[in-house]
Image (cartoon, rainbow, N blue to C red):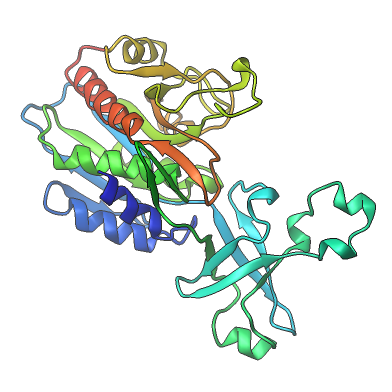
Amino acid sequence: MTELLKQLCLLGAVSGDEGAVREFVISQIKDCCEYSVDNLGNIIAFKKGKKTAQKKVLIDAHLDEVGLIITHIEKDGFLRFKTVGGIDTSALMLRRVLINGKTLGVIGSKAVHLCSSDERKKLPDTDSLYIDIGASSLEEAQSALRVGDCAVMCSDFTVCGDKVLSKALDDRVGCLVLIELLKQDAEYDFYATFSVEEEVGLRGARVAAYTVNPDSAIVIDGTTAADIAGVPESKKVCRLGAGAVVSFMDTATSYDREYYAAALNSGIKAQSKCAVAGGNNAGSIHLSRSGVRTLAVSVPCRYIHSAGSVADMRDIDAVLNLVKYMTEKIAGGNL
């Protein structure tokens, strides 16, 4: 699975510009399921199982990643931008970026020796940052790109034992799991959505869930692991290497209590997400139509929404096994 994850992560897919990842996913699933692409760009797939499901189950992962969008080109060729999704300024400083899949640049700011003592004590806001692509004029910059083009943070994909380091692990880990599930034989029918624009308001999932109209849903995502130096035990949220992360509540969803308990009692390596924080596509899906019973199963990721996120392949494998187990339990009418 590591090579497939590498291919997924190194593609760029800022929210609203997911085409490259969407086409790659289609190339992976087109021979093992039925699928369509809706007007927003969501992939909606149907996997035929050995048995007809007693409950219609939807499994979701999102295609998009956080990034930047170019909003203005200065006369001297520097680019102004806005963030797309939640990115901390500390993750942007002096970071190399790739614009429209071909133009390299670096994010710059006021030189430190020109900053006042007060300015040195705090991070600059994103409005004061710019992208330098080496252009000397407006015209030179315009020959390479235009306002509205998207940029992703440049990143290698590095394997360190069981761990991987890359951009976009949120949520290419979920896409990986969903691709693998679609490639395997299924005990029961299920639906899968690779949704767009999660990072800017859970938009694609809202439309996809309305189309599928499921009884139950399982949302796969990357979630924040704070198991790092200097963080108290009560604030670590979840840990790498401790298995799939199962949420009881976040800022967008109160999860189905029966599904939550069943996941933790499955015998598959899993841990609770020990925080009420963040959110994912469950926030839209569970409110679709007359309501959808929903479970979130996540891969713990350190330094999420940066060019250097870290995940453990053993946790990804646990997520794959747990989602498959829960899908069979729910679709078979046992939950």
